[in-house]
Structures are given as C-alpha cells and as structure tokens.
Amino acid sequence: MKKFISGFVCGAILFGGVTVFAADLKGALFNINNVEVDGKKITVNSQNKPFTFQGYAYFPSYMLSDMGYTPSRSSDGKTITLNSTGKKVYATGGAVGPGIDYLIAASDVVNTSALSSVAYDSSTIIRDQKGTTHSNYMYAMLGDNTPDSKGQVKITYQVDEKYRQFNAKAGVIQHQLGNMSTQPITLTVYTTDKAGQTTLYGTYNYTSKQSLTNLIVPLRYVDKITFTMSSVGDAKVEFAMFDPVFIK
Image (cartoon, rainbow, N blue to C red):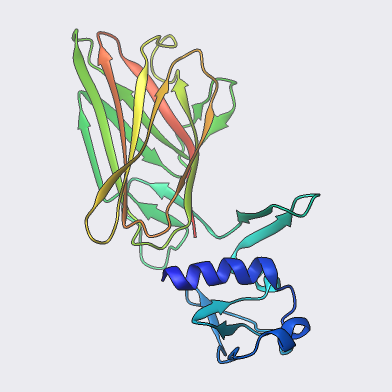
C-alpha cells in the first residue's frame, strides 16, 4: 500500500503527460487498464495512461480531479497542494435506512452527566455565536450543577477506512441555557485502525471567549473515530460541532 500511495503522489506531481517522458521510462509497464475510486471507474485517457515503473504505480495528474482532488501549484512551482473535494456524508445520531448514502449514523453514544444530540437537517435549530442558524450538528450539554462533577459525551463513528477526512466548526454556544457559560470544555479526538490500535489524534480546549474554529481530521486508514467532549466544574456548558461531515 505504501508503494502505491507514494507512486501515486509522485506520478501526479511529475507527469502531466506520460507520452512526453516515454523515452526516459525504460522498463515502464503500461499494464494498468482500469482505475476505480470507491467503486466508481475513472476514465483513462487513451494517450496518457497510468503505468508501473520500478514497482511503483504512477498516475497522470489529469486524473486527480476525477479522484476527488483539486490540485494546485504555488507561484514558484515548488509546492503542490491537493484539496479533497469528494462526496460529503453527513453525521447523524439515528439509524440510517437502506439506500441512503449521504448519512452516517453514530455507532455508539455515551452520556455521563450530560445530554447530547447528533442531528442532520433537524427541525430543532441551533445558533452559533454569531447568530447563524444550523440544522446539522453534534450538540452536547455537559455538567449537572454538582461541584467537581465531570460531564462527558463520547460519540463514535465506524468509518471502515472509507473516508478521507472529517470536517466541522466547533465551539462553546448558548442554546438551552439562559446565558453563555464561562465553563471551558475539552474535545479529545481518537482514531482506531483496522488492527484495533487507538491513537490520540488531538486535544482541543474551548471557552466562551473563542470564536468557532475549524476541526479537520484526516481519516486515511482509519476504522473508527471517537469524539469525547468533557467538562469539569459546577456549571453547565453547551458545545456544538456544526455541519459535521465525512468526506469520501
């Protein structure tokens, strides 16, 4: 797999058109006839085809957009940037019916001295700090007014290595409470691979004085992702991740 990925990246960067370099590729095998991404076949140009060279698979850069990437290059030509533009699959808390491929349901939700809701296109609207309304969100109310209690919400998604990344905007909010709480909260993100190895991806602290911030988690080779929202103290606090989306 590592050989495939590195070959894919190098091929995308170095070869806009393969035919131009054919004379320099002695031993190259043009033995790749089909390319599929998430089960979808990508059209292969008849002149500039993928090929194998010294054990690596190379792809012409024209195929990147069909693979779900928008490539760009810096003005000095020294930096290549790939932005994921794949299909969006929105997070939800309830069961997802057959044939619905734009939603992914949480596989596990655990509330401890807390309330939570994961909703897609909900009739219950939540406002962010600037007053913008959202119907897609992961919401948590943490704490139960008991001094030194720990309110915690733990939400897990089984992603089965099918997604490129997770995106959301996160922050402390005011929804059901009368005022914006000054109680801080901590968001911890864990990823688990197919072998069952769990890794701490990142820990993020939020307060009412902070604006919403982007949360981006790469999901290549990730089997499960878990979000743990927690707060310690004698005050309730509300937190949300708006427009949580998994990108294929």
